[in-house]
Length: 420
Image (cartoon, rainbow, N blue to C red; front, side, top):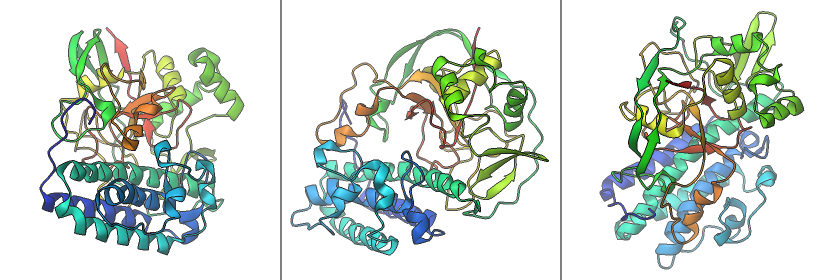
């Protein structure tokens, strides 16, 4: 990690078990898909499932096996061009918006690529230096990020099919009453410590830990629900410019935006599309698939604002990051209503009002791995908390996700804040 000592590697048996578990989950998530399902790309922001499976394999093959295992021979010398994502230091690569054109290798050949790299890495693991074992751990966290992208990208792809097929059957739902009015967690102003404290894994953009000044404020004890968002729509929320940022209003008009992504209004009310197909909208569930522009407009309409990322982190630090509705295994994945009280992790990523920029003292690591986060610190906004598609154990209070303000195909939602 930049500007702090390398983390001590996990015991070999634990690292090998974690590597195998992460790799197995990716295959399980892709198991219901046909070769065609896994090949098609529905939009430039999304990648085919087959590409996710191959790219995460390329990461291990390139930065661990190729660079640190003497005599290792690439599984296929053509694959680096196909499956590099954005690492300029690794040379030319296939265009991101053309990944759906990679009809070959087929899905079975990608699975064989994964199996070969997995076997080589597990065989080499006992001989790898501690700093290289740390790269293996980074690769596991990297693959967990792609597992979430795999889930959300395939959801977008299936939504584009006129048949709106389900990837998994809908789980049995336990009725939950509509939550009462939002409760507010009041917090005094002052200086707080934010950023990762160096204990355990973190991505480079989570540090260095530093002081941040908070004003007196209150943060909502839950996220906004579908029912509350429907009231925003009914009140003309997408039809009046007064609550929207200028760029957001231009986006609404240019794209014809009238509701969150995947919502449709029928004779019996709103429905939404998900990995379990199209279903009636659950008014008690957290609203999701909304952009930063929509989140900011809703907050204005509600007489509130979005929290800063440091307000969110200071409040979330008291809660269990491994709790909530997160991804445990391949299967139905959807935000769900909860009667468990305040929670800051799971269900939906929560937009903050903070731009994704480096912390004071941030430095990029040397080499290609230094391109992981730092070069994207422009024009994007921070989200916090993880979602129903985030592998459990992947998120923490200091975790910084980031997307452009118009993007909404991820499980993104809204928690309000206000000044005191």
